[in-house]
Length: 183
Ligand code: 3AM
Image (cartoon, rainbow, N blue to C red; front, side):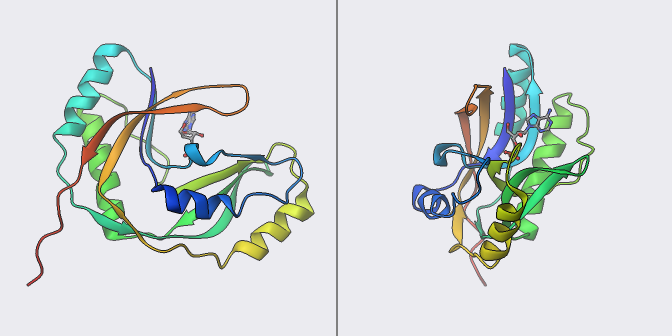
């Protein structure tokens, strides 16, 4: 199984994000059902290791928090822009959840993730995107901010690679605890 740990997004927010898509010839837009925030890419694992991963994730304790999406940007490889994304406002709680997931997965025997956590929602893959249109999109949408949404669970997803888009399946949802009562 090819696995990753991530956050899904509520449908009203997906619909809001989908309104941004378009206007860049050559971009391959991610379908709204695939929008997610990756907390940790795992990759191919054997069934017994998937079970161990589920076990450590189920034992993880973290609290609910609010998440805000905003800003757009691109990732590049070898000087070429490869993906267009919507940013995630960093918060201590998001970073804490991500680091707990990382620690849990190492306990399940995975090698440490060496790349820095850069939370984002991929909007499009850019193989052949027109550069001027891409730059205009980033400029036009950079001030985009979505209303904050509650994060009440995180998810172990499986991913099957497809020709057009990958198919993601939520295999297990792990619930987060209610925030501590104030004062
Ligand atoms: O969250 P995004 O959409 O940026 O590109 C894949 C997707 O990223 C990424 O994991 C997410 C869920 O599939 N991904 C795919 N293969 C990967 C790999 N070998 C990878 N990330 C790191 N290493």
